[in-house]
Image (cartoon, rainbow, N blue to C red; front, side, top):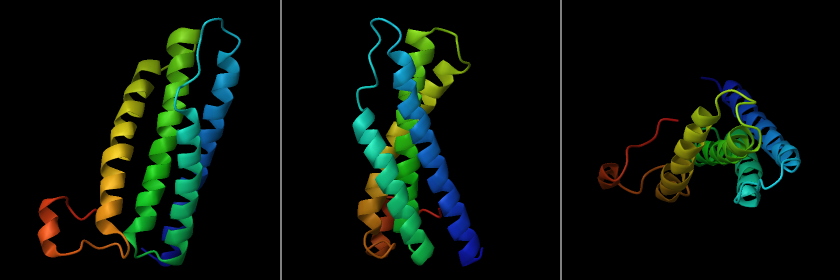
Length: 149
């Protein structure tokens, strides 16, 4: 794949993460019209994580497409955006206004899976592959596969 195509895909992923974060910020506004409904507890961490990680990842990939660190930052940003949106969507669909929107339980499951990917895989590989995008030695392959993202 060409460098230009990788940069376009990465900036598209960045736009997706920002759009999902913007929708996640809109949902608490809808939730506040229902009595007794709280907002998603970790909204600030996921908002900051989605915006900064996806932006940093897009900048790294557009300048150094061979380095996997930028792709991991993009993956971390999208996972944070999915966790944030999934949490707010689940609160709105399952608690605030039940059965108003489709797929509340499915998106809750997807947000939980994204939380695992965000917390475990992206951060683990970020530390393993930092700073040059390669494992320190070939013996580290047993700790995790070299991601071909």
